[in-house]
Structures are given as structure tokens and as C-alpha cells.
Length: 119
Length: 113
Image (cartoon, rainbow over all chains, first blue to last red; front, side, top):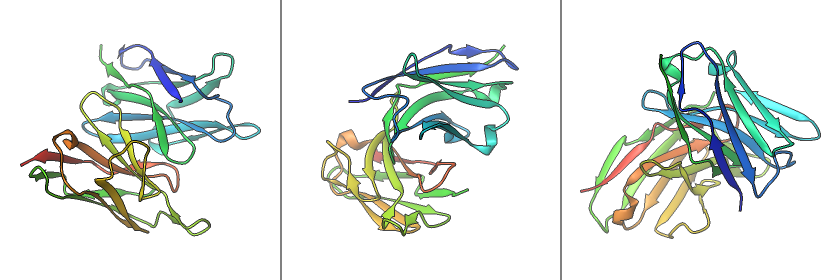
């Protein structure tokens, strides 16, 4: 049974970097069959897929165009986790952030963290 | 990018009655290589992450009651709850994983009439 545990700050100041981590149990971040994604949810944008990282003999990333200039998703094989970094945040980046794992469909979800961007 | 549009935005149904939610994709999400529709339905309750209900458009996830069913192919899909129970009050989302960026419908709020 795969479980995802998210951690990170709930408050970030405008123009700073939002950083969250998703710890994986029950599978490996280096799995050759799983995609590891970040998704956010806000009243204004609904559910928005931000991007993913995955390993297929080497590491790959895909990012949504809407955040491509801001986002980095990176694996941490030593700790079996992956991270989201979103730089230059504004109040519009306020949302509940979820990590998720999928083979095809988004089967596994973290608990979600509300991140507020405010001074 | 594929745009997912759900209808209606909200729905009130009496207990024991049928609830139907529609989802339309702006382009086909049917992979002809394996004849599978890359369409998923989620249920979300307040304070919780989305819960996987239906995948491949019509396959119930483990533990999902059989009153939930999915149908459709290509661009048009339906989630049906055959006999509404009180615990089914929630938001429902469709989502495509045919291509990145993955995209979700705007959600349908299901309530008891």
C-alpha cells in the first residue's frame, strides 16, 4: 500500500520560494512504472496539475506551461521522496497543494497542505 | 491542451434516486493502441484529497460500491450513481491523463434534495 506524506510551510511571503516535500512509503521514487506529480487546488483555478517527475533509465520532468518558468520538481533518492519548488510566488499561488503517484491514473494522493502566500 | 467540461455544476437528488454527471473532453482521450479511455472520476469530500472512483472510464476502483458506474468513450463520459446515499454528498471531478498537462473538470457538487 503506497502512502504519501507531505511536509512544508503553510505560509510563504510574496516573491519567495514555496517548497514542499512528499515522502513515499510502499514504493520507490525511482520506480520504472510510476509518475510522481504535484497538483494544487484553489477556488479560482480548481484542480490544477503542475508537473511530474519520473525515472525511466534516467530522470524526466514534465511541467504545466502556466508554471513552467517558476517550477522545479526533483527526486531525492536517498530519502525516497520528491519535492516541489515554486519560485517568485504571488497571492495567486495560494492553494492546497497535493502530491500524487500514478501508474496510469492518479491512484495515490498525499493529505494536502494549504499554502498561503501573504506578507 | 485538453479542456474538460462537466455538467451540471451542481445537482440535488433525492435519497435512493439516480444521479448523473457528465464530462466532455475537448478532444478524444481514447488511445487506439490499447482501446482504453484515459478518463478518471474522483470523489472529494471537505478537507480530504480526491479519492479515485472510476478509471479507464468504466472500471471501479477497489472498495468503491457498485452503485457507482462510469460510461462513455472518446470525448463524452458519464458518472452514474444508481441509488444516492447520504454519504455520496461530495464534489465529483473527471480528469484526463491522455496527455500532459493532465486536466480536470471544474467539478460537480452533489447534494441531497
